[in-house]
Amino acid sequence: MSDNKKTQVQEFEYKAEMKQLLHLIVHSLYTHPEIFLRELISNAADALSKVRFRQLTQSGPTENGDGELKVSITLDEENRRFVIEDNGVGMSEEELIANLGTVAKSGTLGFLQAMKERQQGEAGMDANLIGQFGVGFYSVFMVTEEVTVETKADGTDGCRWKSSGEGTYSIEKIERESRGTSISFTLREESKEFAESFRVENIIRKYSNFVDFPIYLDNKRINSVAALWQKPKSEVTEEELNEFYKFVSVDYQEPLSHLLLSLEGVVSFKALLFLPKEAPVDMLYQQGALEKHGPQLYVKKVMIQHECKELLPEYLRFVTGVVDTEDLPLNVSREVVQNSPVMAKIRQILTTKIIAWFESLAQEEPETFRRFYKAFGPVIKIGLNTDFTNREKLIELLRFESTATEDGEYVTLKEYVARMGEEQKEVYYLSGDNRRQLLSHPNLEYFRKKGIEVLLLVDPVDVFVIPSIGEYDGKPLKSIEKADIDFSKGDGEEDEALGSSLMEPVIRIFRETLGESVEDVVASHRLVNSPVTLVGSKDAMDSQVEKMLRMMNRDMASGKKILEVNPSHRVIKNLAGLCVLDENNPIIRTTMRQLFDGAQLLEGGLEDTADFVSRMTEIIEAATKSGKS
Ligand code: ADP
Ligand code: MG
Image 1 (cartoon, rainbow, N blue to C red):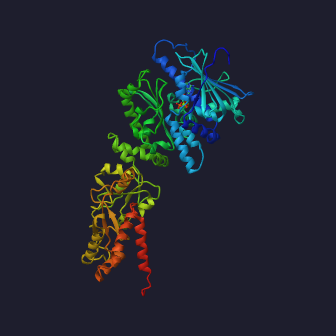
Image 2: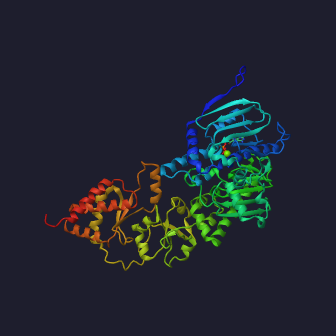
Image 3: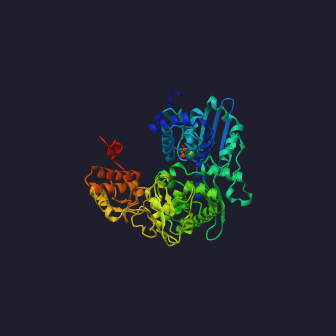
């Protein structure tokens, strides 16, 4: 540039993960390049709301005076130029480096991770992922090779940031009068559509119609700026609702259901809430993910907080939307949001209203409720152990598969209890990985034979939640894995079980053979088709809980089980016969070990498979011997 005064252009290198991200964006996201516009407008709106907030909370104008807070987009179709400008807070040099040079945002990191997993899976990028994360500013590199950001914050010098998104960026000081940010670039040839006003106008309407700052396109005002939640119910159209949902929730799908509230009383607020069709990927699998969710908080139509977790208890934070109150001051700080009695009251009312909403869905739109429960049932269950005020209502919302339902159909505890037989005093359940595995579980045989319904718990959190319910309608909830279930009643017709004298040697040799591997060996009446099964002692851990704990801690010893032996089973009878002939016949002990391992295998807890297979070969060999060898 000028020769006597050196311009100070500093070069910087992106962090490694940034390079990776940029690469992914340019090469994988390419199917939805239009979202770059949504991201840039949303950043501009954020910067503008920071100014609006300052204006409302500080006396006197900000440094540069203000004028209308707005976003302006200027297009030059001929030269494929695109410029978007805002008079928001702008950035200082340090902020530029921190905000645009690193992956500072957890959402972006989450996105990177999901991308990696997806790619290992096989399929590339899909709209769902983009919708869930939004990769922010960097999405601009989908449509251009080089971006220039000029910006100025109050009290700092103007700065120009430039990057081609290929590993480095540069920063230099510039003369800039007005506070705010302007982002400019030349569109790639294949993205030239984004310099056409018609196209850009449509995208703004599609994604950014509810941004509450005016957006100008070549000086023409585009968006409507309507606070939908302030309108009376009758004036809100389905289409507006769907659009608004997509806007606030950054979802590409339509919402599953919505709730419009207008409350006046101890506190007054209006709310427009939505249920998404699916749970965001992070919600179920990432610890602490719910911390980052929640509806938006507005005070007197001014956005105060994006994801206000204080509005809802943790187990309801998948509910999105907007809550707008007149009862908080505009300059409400984070601390006030956390501690204000007004917020506590709003949360309490919202919780009640939301649970009532779920109840009415269950009653009036069972299909919608089922879909909702499939997506968010596991999250709701957190509430059973955290929200004791609403516990009873939450218990009524619970749904389970059972031996009496079709695959994928649910039963409530109320329905279960209503159809329990006269003599049945307890609610039975069995937990495991999936329905198929559970249905073939030996412990179920007795119940199926007797026609007693058993709840099949396939959601991993059930084993933590269900025992804590304790009892429903005076009926204890009991795992059929536990040994103290009383099978004595009405068992008269049990066919040709071995008598105790014949069983005695079988049980004794079982005990001898298995030694320390089991807590005990006993004759059992719960089995019908299986020779043996493992059950936990009365106060043992549920085997699913144990399995999970062991996944987390490999060294944890597994709790000992009781082996129950079926005196009516062919194999046990054969063993008893062999014992009478010769107790020392080695096939007896081999068979017993094998039966025990088989039972462990069914529970998913067999460690030494090599032994299992070699013993199996031994037994097959014995079984296939011609008789005269
Ligand atoms: P996010 O908006 O989710 O934080 P982005 O990648 O979209 O992530 O933006 C990164 C950061 O860059 C923003 O958090 C903000 O601090 C800053 N930024 C981006 N655009 C602007 C802008 N127009 N005005 C002021 N700051 C901006
Ligand atoms: Mg952003």
